[in-house]
Structures are given as C-alpha cells and as structure tokens.
Amino acid sequence: MAKQIITSSTSPTTGFTDKSTPSPLAQAIRWGDTLFVSGQGPLDPETKEVVSTDIQEQTRQTLSNLEGVLAAAGAGFANVVNMRVCLRDTADFPKFNETFAEILAGEKVTRTCIGGTPHRKGVNVEIDCIAMFD
Image 1 (cartoon, rainbow, N blue to C red):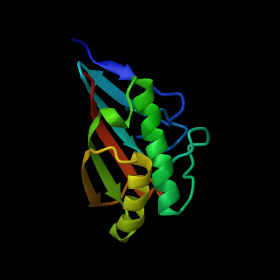
Image 2 (image 1 turned 180 degrees about the horizontal axis):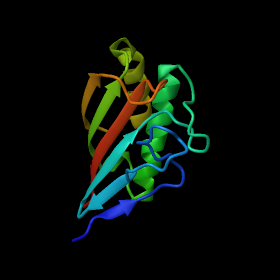
Image 3 (image 1 turned 120 degrees about the horizontal axis):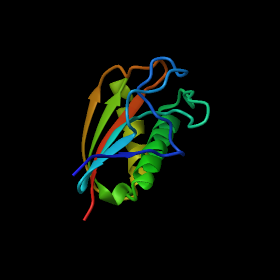
C-alpha cells in the first residue's frame, strides 16, 4: 500500500521558513486507515500571515486549518485519536484550553501540550494530529 498525499485548498501548507519558498512537507499523509497531519499554525490560508497575537484567535485559526486538512482527507475531529500541541508561552494554556474545548465541542482526543518555540515568529500555537478511519 502506498502513502497518499492529502492537500487542502482551505488550509495553508506549513514548514517553510520563507513563505515564497515551497514547503518540503505534505499537509497530511494517509497510510491505510491512519492519517498523519502536519503541524498547523494560526496562519491565514490566503496570505500565510499570522492572524493575530491573541492566543484564543490563534487557537481558533489553527484548529480551523487543521479541520480543513482533515476534511480534505474525508475526516473530522471525530476521527482524531491524538493531538500534539506546542505553545510558545505556557502561561497561555488556560485560554488555549478554553478555546480548544469550545471548538472540539465535547469530542475526546488524547493530547500532549508542551511549551516550546514554534519555527515562525508570531506563531504562538502549533498543533498536529493523528486520525483513524474505520
């Protein structure tokens, strides 16, 4: 079985240092019943600029971008089994978590959330995930 590259037209492709340079990454790769989604951040899909400095707005955009990639694969948050989150400032966790819970609306996933430095200036949250199909 070959891996299937998934591309969403409604979400930006990340993994670039200079936004004019093509990314070396796939937005997602499906292998059998498993979908691996690359980290998404709070970038506007058209401008590839960070949408805001506010962690709640960044979280909404990041999850929207993630949802767009999932949809391109025929999946949604109900298919997600694991998420990994990187917060630039761990003091943002309460507001991040409030928005995360609001967007996932009761959907349960496993999750790891760490503090770190996302690769792009102004990006205060990045999330990747693994989703499964029946």
